Each structure stands twice: as structure tokens, then as C-alpha cells.
Amino acid sequence: MADTGGPGQEVDHTFKILLVGDSGVGKSSLLLRFATGGFEELTPTIGVDFKAKVVDIDGRRVKLTIWDTAGQERFRTLTSSYYRGAQGIILVYDVTRAETFDSLADIWLREVDMYNTVEEGIKMVVANKTDLGEQREVSTEQGVAFARAHGCLFVETSAKGNVAVDQAFEELVHKILETPSLLASSGSSFGLKTKQNAGASSCCG
Image (tube, rainbow, N blue to C red):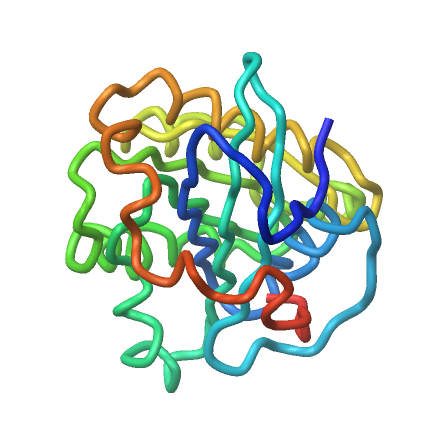
């Protein structure tokens, strides 16, 4: 279904995807699971991390450049520029910490509106850490209602249990491929010439 993509590889589209959300919600673990199939208990990201992956969807080869941002407030000004040119934005919260869900509206959606330059960019809400069901503080119904209210896709995942991680990224890419204006902008985002294997993941969000 996917590979990391060699330097001279032909692709039909290149999309920039951004992962945002509070520190510790599992953004980097989601990225690591999707990009490499692995899982580690990671330390918080310092600044911004980056991985690339090529996927075959709907008969098209799509290169995803996925940017993992630090959730801590002290890095907020550093990461704001990375919103520019993103065709897809994944807003992640931890189902066992209600405050990370509240932050989606209080912080992260506001930042998306403020900094993202792609008007029809696709937003997805990802409810992570569903493997910790007994500690859950945010119900599926709450997540679905929030996503609907803000025009976002919604997926529940477990990076640790490898539940629906590929599904989340693939649904997002499907939606981008269905949006003509985003196809027109594919490959135009800054940073796409960054080395393919830049930035080893170093955090759990």
C-alpha cells in the first residue's frame, strides 16, 4: 500500500499534512506508526519534526510530507509558519485527558484559522489512545459532535495498538483528492524539497 519513496520516484501529487494538538496526545507516535509501522514511547517534540511517505490511493501515487509540531506553548511561535500551504490538518486529542479535547476549540482550531493559507484544506479530528478505554474521559459521541460542528472528519485511533492509524491518514488523503482546488496546489507547499528522511521522530506529541 505504501513505501517511503526514493529520491527520484515519480508521484502524481504531493500533499503537506500537519499534526497539531497538545503535548503528550500521541502525535509523534501516530506519525511513527504510519510512516514506519513501529511504536515507541517517545519524548515531547522540540520544535517541528518531519517524515515523508508515498501511498497508492485510488490508483494514484501520493507523496505525503507530514509535519509533527510541538504542543508546548513555548514553541507555538516557532511552529506557526508550518501551517502555511498545508492541504490537510490533523487535530489530535487524548481520549483519557479531557483538557486536550477542550484545547482543540480553545487553541488549535483558532491557530488553523489564523495561520493556514489553504482555504479549502481538509481538517480531521483524531481521538487517540483508545487502548486506554478504562481511563476514557471523552466519549466517541462528544468527538463526533465536535468534528461535525467544525466541518472535520473524525477517526478514533490507538497508535500503541495500531488501530485505525492508516485509516485516518488514508481517509484524509481521499478527501484531499476529491477537492479540485487542493489538487491544483499539490506540490506547491514550501519544504517539499527537504531530504526524504529528514527528522527522526523524537516524541510522543
